[in-house]
Image 1 (cartoon, each protein chain N blue to C red):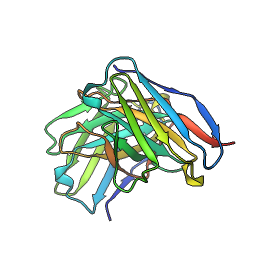
Image 2: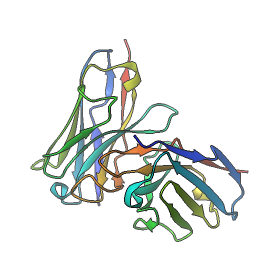
Image 3: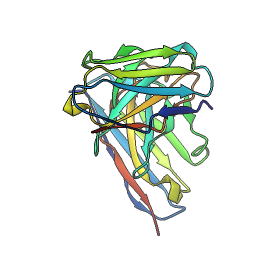
Length: 121
Length: 108
């Protein structure tokens, strides 16, 4: 079964850091670009970041640029999002999603169940 | 950044009725790089349509997408009980990705 499972969410203080993971199974992870998308409570979807299949190209929304870092380990079939200088407005459910292609140029056909990040003192 | 505006915000319909959802872009969406997603409460989004009009794997043919340039439409020909949800459009061209604010399809 094709599956993405996020982990690493939790409660963090403003200014703190957190690393999210997304474990992939059921498909050749190294062949697909990957993305992070977030959703604040009761709100819509917001794009966060993308990475190409080999990890050589990365992209960020302006709202997280310089604070978040996307990476992947194709030997472990895992996607990461290192989040720093966290703010109240970063509080959301974070989803990882698979691009339909190896380069981040297509729609997202597989989504994880999401992991909640709470930023509060 | 391309801004996507979805209308209406909420659509109240009965099962069996036709639903027409609109997504308008602030500038032309290149190569029809426009997708539609369905999201139910407590669940992750699900891809319905990509490339403006291509159905994703396993999506019933009552869902169809159309449009180009700046105006796109998702049509659900006959609403089934499981179709009541929030729908988002997304553009994904030129290494910039944005979502519309969503349209909620609710039972009348």
